[in-house]
Image 1 (cartoon, rainbow, N blue to C red):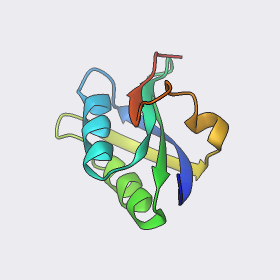
Image 2 (cartoon, rainbow, N blue to C red):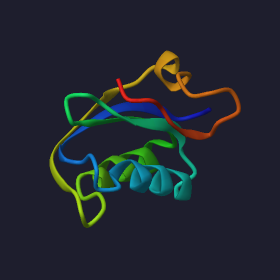
Image 3 (cartoon, rainbow, N blue to C red):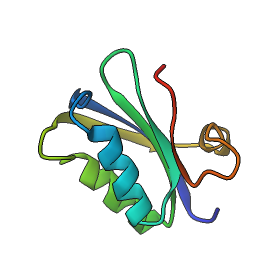
Image 4 (tube, one colour):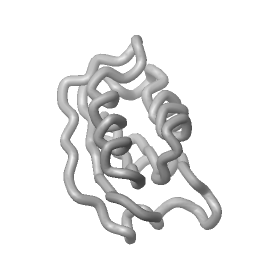
Length: 99
């Protein structure tokens, strides 16, 4: 993996509206690596890895999400290879269990 890794938390009405599936599809379409999961507090958490401009575009898109979602806040920070490696071996972009 070359480029950047970003750790993102999205809050609002982002669970039960297809948000994770939208993130998965959108990240795959951009060729990004990473994962997405729900959090028990109602937010969605994701890690995106790839070229800086494409990761930035994905994070910006997270502010819109699918039409059924209402995004209140997108918080992005530096990610680590340890976070990226929470996905299974051989997975490019994964769904992780809720935490």
